[in-house]
Structures are given as structure tokens and as C-alpha cells.
Image (cartoon, rainbow, N blue to C red):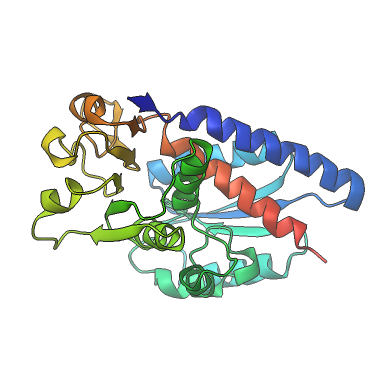
Length: 281
Ligand code: GUN
């Protein structure tokens, strides 16, 4: 069993971004800029945004966080996004999800200029991803693909079971895997027999937010298991969606939580923002 070390791969990606930012500054006088919109008081969202801002600073980006109260109106959020769309110093716009209940998330995401949509959530970029065209791709699934690449895990013809069908993780993950010629099964809350699907797969990718969902008898011997879940349990510790202790011995590769997919998400956000800045005219 080999651990896939997301922490060190994320550092490698970040170091490369920092190097390219330095070059971009020297050669073209461009400083990549990221705007983050944070709405409400969700502690997890605040923690993630803080980590994102810190990472931006570390690689030499310009970054701003718009902190807005829970009670803000949809029109005010839209006006802020439109301001960021027009701001030439901003290459990437990220609206931290989830949004308060009175806000229409789909409407908000559609206002972001697709060329600044570094989260890859805009329908334009999702459509391009599905078609196999160059696009901004959601950071977490993109980070998983980077892991496969780094560990030279060949996806062609592999049976991959994606557990979870969210717009943020499961659906873009399935598209990326399909584009890489894997045979993809997407399971979700209405799937009749989850175990039948996971135990037949060469690779299981799970991101649903249910601690310990994937158990030892649900994966085959030698499987590759990618755990996207980050769950804080009662004792305060972080665990994934996989019963790591019992599943890991059966795997050829597995990602730990923490230190697996988590750090990759921020690294790919930096990478997407750099990609956008490089397209400035
Ligand atoms: N909430 C949970 N994951 C994400 C993410 O990748 N991007 C944004 N914007 N919000 C999230």
C-alpha cells in the first residue's frame, strides 16, 4: 500500500506557481489577482477562505476578500461580482459556497465572467469540460487528476466508481475521468447497491461528507482509493469518507485525510488563477 501524499504534491504545485508568478512580474509586469467573496458566518467557509488568502500571499498574488453579512441581498452580491468582472487587476473570482438560503446560487455563479471563473463552476466552463475543450475545471477534481498524473496512475480503460454526484466534485470528476478514457460509474444517494459498484471498481473516488462510508468489504484487493471527504467528528479530529484504518491495507494506493486531496484544492486554485493571468492581453 502506498500513500498518495497530497501535502507534498500541493507544495510542489505551489512552488511552481510562485516561480511562474515571479517570471510574469519580471517579463510582463503582471501580478495575478484573486477576489474571494465570503458571505455569512459559516466557520468552515471562513477557515477555507483564510487558507486561500494565505496561499495567495505565499505565491505572490494580489488578493482581496469581500466579507459580506448573511443578510446581504442577491443584487448586492451581483453588483460586487460585476465590479470584479470589470477590475483589470482581478484574474479570478471565487464565491465561497454554500451561500445563504435566500440566495440563488446558480444565478450568482452565472454572473461571474467565465474567463475569471477559476472555480470552474460556470455553465460555460462545465460545458467546455464535458465537451473535452480547454476550460477552467473545479479545483478539487482537478487536484485528484494531478495526483493520478504525479503517481503515474494510468486511467485508460480502468473501471472507476465516483461516489457522489455534486456539481462541485462528483460531476466534474466523472467528466475528467471520462475524458481520460476511464469507464466511469457515478453513484449517489439514490443508488440501490453502492457496494456492488464500489467493490467492482479498480479506482474508487468518494466525496460525499459521510464519515467512514466506504468500508473494507466495499473495495476490491489492490484498488486505488481517493478520499475527498473532510469531516470533523465529535472528538474534534478530521476524517474522510473512507474507513481508512481498515480499507488502507487492501489498497495499492490511498489518500489520507488530512494531507490527501484537501491541500490539492488550494494548489489548483492558485494554478487556475495563474492560468487566467497568463491570458491577460
Ligand atoms: N465550498 C466547498 N468547496 C468549494 C470550492 O471548491 N469552491 C468554492 N467556491 N466553494 C466551495
